[in-house]
Structure formats: C-alpha cells, structure tokens
Image (cartoon, rainbow, N blue to C red; front, top):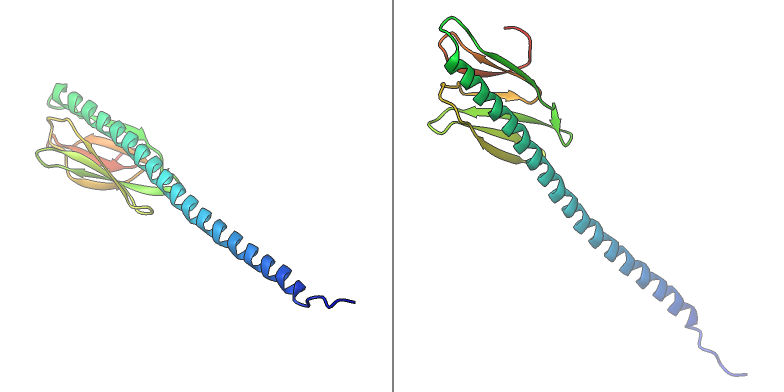
Length: 154
C-alpha cells in the first residue's frame, strides 16, 4: 500500500471558506453600490417632485397677483390648492423669500434636498414658511399677498 496524504480534507474546507469569503465581499460591494444608486435616484425623484410643486405654487401666486391687480379696491383675492402632503414619503416645507427677486425655496430633511423656484409678481408677497399640503393664497387688507397653510376661512 502506498501512503496517501492526510491533508486532503483541509483543501476542501479551505476552498469552501475562501469561496464564501469572496462571495460575501462581492455581495457587500454590490449592496453598497446599489444603495448609493437607490439614494441618488430617490434624491433625483424628490428634486423633480419639489420643482413641479414649486412651479404649481408659483403659477398660483402669479394668478393671484393678476387677480389682485385687476380687482376693485373693496375686493379681495383667495386661491386654494391641494398639494401633496409628502414627497417620496417625507414632509417638505415651502418658504417664500420676498426680496427684489421673490422666490420659493422648497426643502426636505431626509435626504436634504433644496429647490428654488422664482416668482413673477407685481403685488408684494409676505415672507413666510409653511408645510406642504393644502395651501391658500390670500390678499391681505394692506393689498399684499400671503401664503398660508390649510384651507377654509381665516
């Protein structure tokens, strides 16, 4: 009889452990890369959705502005709009910046996304910050426009 090597079982165990280790490393790399891709796609979707919402609000402000310019002294303007409460599962805020170049800033917190949408208006608009959802654009007694959360009166 010939002597057979006794380390044969070690090679199979070692090959199995190495194969398992390489598989774990490859799957971890794929998950990390895939997770970053999903986050990038989510941010892109949120940015697009915020831009659309901002453009709708800006269009409503422009409409309210035109109505305010054309109404009689004792008339007032009120526009209401139902906007989504959330974008991609998270809440968002709408901030009105009333500088010489009035604009809206729409933001989400997780992930941090910020979108600017310009306003075209002649009537002064009050600076404010509201949550997304139902909103109302009013003409105040002083003739300015204001953006407020919610609907209904008052």
